[in-house]
Image 1 (cartoon, rainbow, N blue to C red):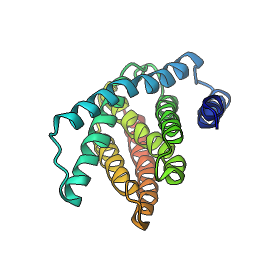
Image 2 (cartoon, rainbow, N blue to C red; image 1 turned 180 degrees about the vertical axis):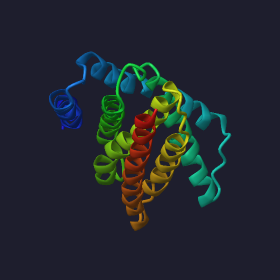
Image 3 (cartoon, rainbow, N blue to C red; image 1 turned 120 degrees about the horizontal axis):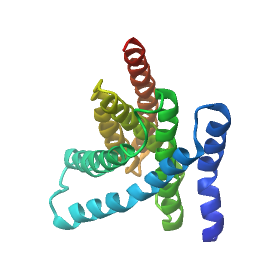
Image 4 (cartoon, rainbow, N blue to C red; image 1 turned 45 degrees about the horizontal axis):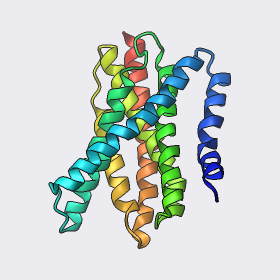
Length: 212
């Protein structure tokens, strides 16, 4: 598959969801939707730089399965989710309702997930079938959780749980997805739990927002 075809295939979900949000969510603004996608793509630069620095520094010594898990939580959980979370502050959380802001955050995560899928496809990653199916979903879900945290902070009702969940879920997902044995399929279970928790956090924040 050539590079143009790879890009087209990997970014179809982003385009499709963007159009759906623009049609279904009446307060959705195209400019902010595009900004969300751009922020997602821009986040890849600092994420790659920080991960490369940590990897080259030799700070993480991988000797046991526990250290592999710790590395996944640091590199994929803390680094990726905190950088994405920081960029989400550029979106208009105070002038946008929770539902619309959440849509923007999902698009941001979708942009990251689609780009990561493209990298996996081009590089011929070992667990490509699992990664192509799940990488987009975990990024969308975790970025949605980060977005809920950002919205809560910007609207003075700080709710830290979504950010913590995003970090842990992403790290644990990468831990399981990195195995070549059947253990890798536990990554699917992590995704389902993350989706459920995302729904719970959204409902909690929606209730708090309504009462204010």
